[in-house]
Amino acid sequence: MFLHLGGEVMVPTKDIIAIFDISSTLKSKNSQYFLDVCKEEGFVQKIVQEDPRSFVITEKVERSVKKGKKSRKTVIYYSPISALTLQKRAGFIDDIDKF
Figure 1 (cartoon, helix red, strand yellow):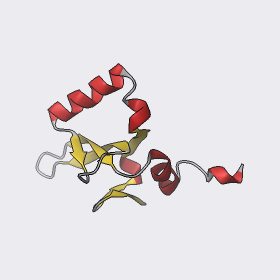
Figure 2: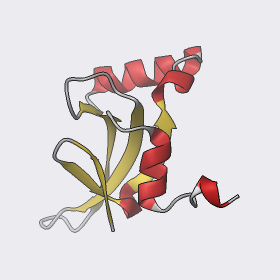
Figure 3: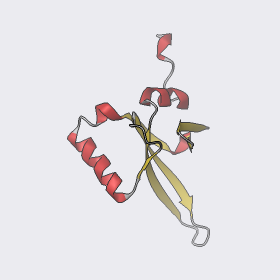
């Protein structure tokens, strides 16, 4: 199954490590530092020009055809869609209205 993150970006749900709300996460200095380092290292991809509402950490396992080795590629996507909406779409949480 795939998850639409906004714009023209879709990722396999099996590659998703975590989905975070950006406004609550940025209140922590450690989280802000983590995202700053990831941006400097080139792991961050902004999907659209508008302000992000969430970010999604993904990791894809890539196999080298020539060497037969596995490598992992981490990508953090800034999404304009709320973390709660993304989590519901991915099936990570049930509909809250049921409770």
